[in-house]
Length: 173
Image (cartoon, rainbow, N blue to C red; front, side):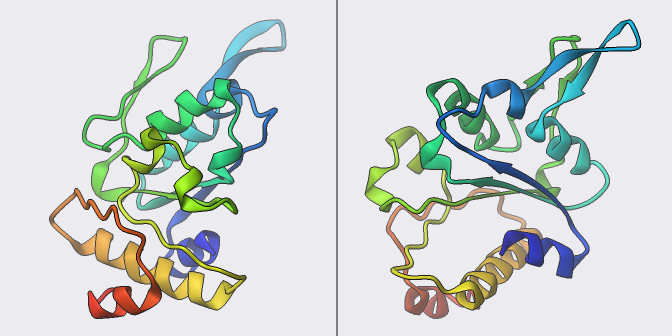
């Protein structure tokens, strides 16, 4: 799992489960009342961006295909190229990730062709598994994150669905 990969590599992990009811504020953050004052509370995206300033972070968006219309724009923001990703908070503060520390993993139990073009165009790598295989997912996630962490290239565009055999042929394991 992405959490195990992050843990094994000493990276931080921020997790966001998407449901049809998940509001964008859970991802982007919101103002709260605390002790009579109004203060900002980071959402998962803000926490992940801040974590990238202290080292590598894996931001997992679980069940992205279940995101509500309200939350989808926040998911798309998280999938923006890290070189141009900016999150402007209601406080006026602007957060930007450290690109070489920024890793986003999305999961879905739906068929890959059900993802909207807006999502699939932002995914650098798509892996289709026809059944549960935690060991295979962990092996592939570790290999891909390791390759991304050590590569000077920041952009990968692999639109075809890759199987494990093709990953092996590409040297990602």
